Length: 208
Image (cartoon, one colour):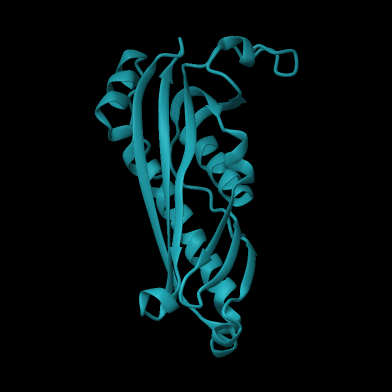
């Protein structure tokens, strides 16, 4: 396949990233969050024409990362409600009665997705990385913290297994970023201050 791709100058690869979505075994914060997820986060598609016979790539990442972080935040926080804006009226909408105002809001954004195939790296594996931004806002919508987290993944593969290898590397990159969020986000200084201000500063702990 690699030789054929070289002869044809390029190969076209189309991939919708899929994988298992684990549920973290952690004790949630006793906090309610209004989760803001931009529309492009859920529908994100990466396209690139790689040099030196790397081929044309179309990688659909949105559906899996949306499902993954929805599961993650549902576990990290006691209550999560998706909203479009950091205002309480979104929580008190007719289709979500009785939920009340959240303690704060969290916006997640994908800043960057990148990958490198063996043809370009000279190594025997595909590598992938994801970069996410978490923006924490208090109950009034004021920004309290902005934090960037990066996840990495890699998987061996080539030829006919190229899309499978990139799929596995991409899943690992999403999960790696998620693990960092679960373990390290609550340790950021501004996040600690916010949690202290509402009296809920309990680091999430693994459930034994």
